[in-house]
Image (tube, rainbow, N blue to C red; front, top):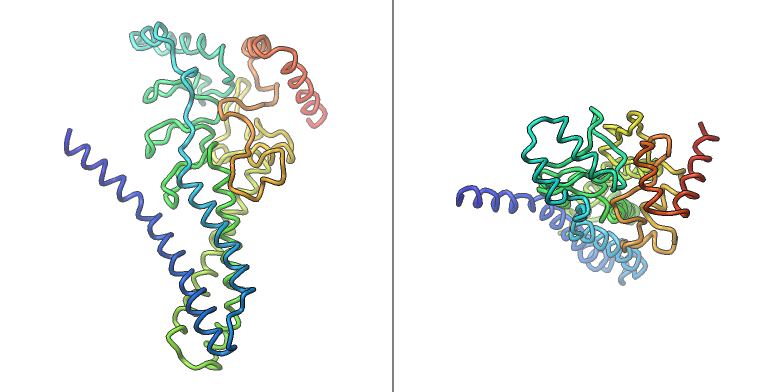
Length: 329
């Protein structure tokens, strides 16, 4: 028992190494830009510090660090108790040895839940580890040892699961990291060229400035490709998992099963109010447990049950969405 606990603690400590690496690189970049470039180098040759460089740099640095740590510190959202099996059904499920009978128990419970996705074999998605019926788009993370709502992926660079609770923060982190690198490259390149062509004398700042440009350019290229991919996913209302393995509905798999149109897809992640889009604050829509889907994928029996629970407002919403899907197909 003790060795297992010790190994788990060691694993958790090692998981913070990528985060430590990123913070060391960012900390060094701050020192190289502010101290070596703006204070020392620029002052030596221009006689004063260019405040415009420092203001622009600190704006993007602040937004980048803010979004990064919001992504790290946001606790992954997990299914509520409503998705757990009631005591009677749980005892029946654990005693039952036949998979068919277990599925009957799960189907009975799932009829009262907004769950429309299935396994590849058409069964109710159930986590035997967390002992919950998985909400749509929810997956179990072996690293976090929990089911995560609208799980996108587990990111080692933030040592956290990226999902419903922090996906917006993650996208903003990538965006501001890219802009941070752009600001560095755009303002450092003139000094990079002068040092490279020997137009400036060798100083202690030369190494920092040359290396800063290379590092910023390298990170920009790698982050930009990842940012572009996730912006594409936002526009399609897909997660990384769904992009590689389409969610399965009652009528089969469909990668676009949760797509509601570009504008609504963006609002699902960033919210209805554009004034909050650029800030790493909570503004996404929904609760992470239920998502609007195209009605063609919903089991009739379950749809009727959900309509009875939510009343006329949901009936109108489903009718409107179904009408849009009919005209677009």
